Image (spheres, rainbow, N blue to C red):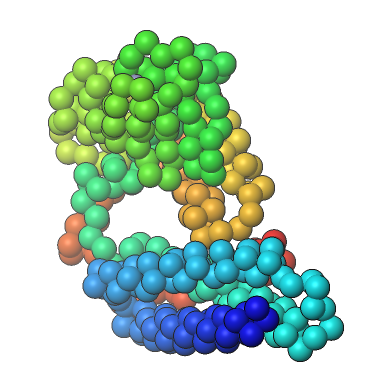
Length: 313
Ligand SMILES: [Zn+2]
C-alpha cells in the first residue's frame, strides 16, 4: 500500500514539475510582451495570444487547486515522522506555492490585456455602448421591490423576472457577463436587447437611448437629456439605487476567497463605478476613429498586488 503511494507521489511530483515549466514559459511570454508594449505597442493578435496563455493557466490552476485539496485531506497522519510524510507535505506546499504564482501571473496578464485594449484597439460607438451600458443598472431602475432581489455569486443578482409572472426571483442578472437569463421562461438578453424589450423600441433607438444615458457621443441622436426615457435611467434616484447594488456586489466579491474569477468580478465592479462617476460628472465619451488611434509607447501598467490578501488557503 505504502509503495503504491510512493509511486503515486512521484508521478504527482513529475506532473507539478511539468506545470512549473509551463508557468515559467508563460511568464517569459508575458515579460517579453510587457517590454514590447513599453517600446513598440502591441496589437489585437497579442491579446489573442495572451488569452490562450490565460486559458492554459486557468486549467493548471484548476488541477492544482483540487490536487492541494486532496493532498491536505488525504495526508497520511499515521505515518508522520517518516520521510514519506515529509515528501508528501513538501509536495502539497510546492503545489500551493505554484498556484499562488499562477494566480499572480493570471492577474498580471489580464492587466496587460486591459492596457493593450485601452491603447491599441479601435473602438467604434457601438462597441463603446456595449462596454459602458450596464444591465444591472437598467434592471435595477425598472425593479420596484427590493424584496425580490437576492445576491447570488461574486458577480450576479437574482431578480424577479420582468418577462413573466414570477413569484420567486428566477432571473439571473450577471454584472460581469453584462447579461441576464431567466431560468423559468428562458429569456436571455444583453443590455441592448433588454432596452428593446422593455421600452418596445427598435435596435437603432435602443443604441441611441443607451448612448444618451451613458453620455457617449453619437451622431444624430433622436433623444435629448429631457426625454422621459433618458430621465428615468439617469435620475438621482435610479443612480443611487444602482450604486447601492454595485457596493453590495463589490463587498460580497471582496469577502470571497481570492481566485482569478473573483479578481475579474471585482475589476468589473470597479469599471462600473468609474462609468457611474463619469456620468455624474457629465463627462462625455467619444469613440476613437482610426486617425486618432493612440498606439505605440504608453506607460508601463502598475501592478499592485497585495500578497497578504491574495490567497487564503
Ligand atoms: Zn422569466
